[in-house]
Image (cartoon, rainbow, N blue to C red; front, side, top):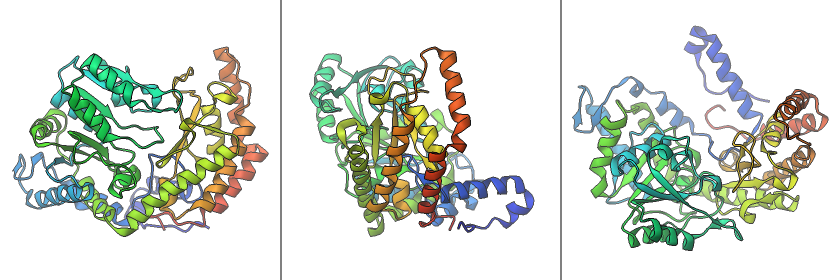
Length: 446
């Protein structure tokens, strides 16, 4: 059974409504299986850093050059966080900015520092698993810069580096960008950098998803050659919700100015405190063991899904995430499957697959990963059980006929969602998921 974790006596008394929502979210986590690859569980120490008195301090500027007084302690904190980031990633010689509020602002800040509007950027095609800030037409990046796209090799469903090089020679981009949100294979950062240098471009890697794996040495690193590296600080790194920008010295001053005053005001020093704690944890033997197991778990889960007849993009994974292509069951089935699994306490996200003919809201794939469950202590045996549950849900619900007419399709989905809570398979698997989940503690709440 779930037992309450961290105590909030003042909050419980002063705002019982918010206190109740916290307890409900704790219970949801404890009794469910978190497979969203961009989510994880931070330690209680990270939670405490994030809730510290540093949340009160305005600190516009940088250490030694602030626009408010009373920053003598904050300066030490921020420098400590930078030093720990440099050590964790082996980023000696790089400028480090730990002030970005999140990954999207970090990427936009880099662009604004080094690009002029309409400059050419070479990045992966959006439908092949990159972030919105890598040139989506609906995003600031795609509206203000000219993105051209390299693609997968259709035979392997992996990055076609030869095509990347040909496109770089053809388009002469100012920036070549690598790093992805839904790519299950390792990235050859050194090859990307070499292509960039061949055409006189800046190389940039967005390692938000794989940062923790890179720190632990279970994924190739973009250091020490890549010109600019951005990352979020949660996901596989198991830190708070923030971001870091690493840059070679020739870009650091421009990037710092783009962060402040160009894009942001006062940094969130409580987040930086929590990040410093997470970066210390990231160089521990226990963290390397977690990262190694995360990759093992993803491989084991992928094997179960494929053995159950599901099609995985690139036919497997090298990292922490898996992308399931549901098009063999029909177009646009990702929403249906994700909602069915959610009702069974198995949390992942619907996701587009390469060249997906369906819409982003009703895509043809699902994305899942193993960082959070690995943090809770699960291993290959648990992945086998979870994979079997996922296969059963997919085979039961991905085959539902969806009318082409938009109104009829919407009504069919509405009726489907209404019946999920009483579906016998969903009820059965929901209890199985709960029984499995409660055996493993959730850091920070137990």
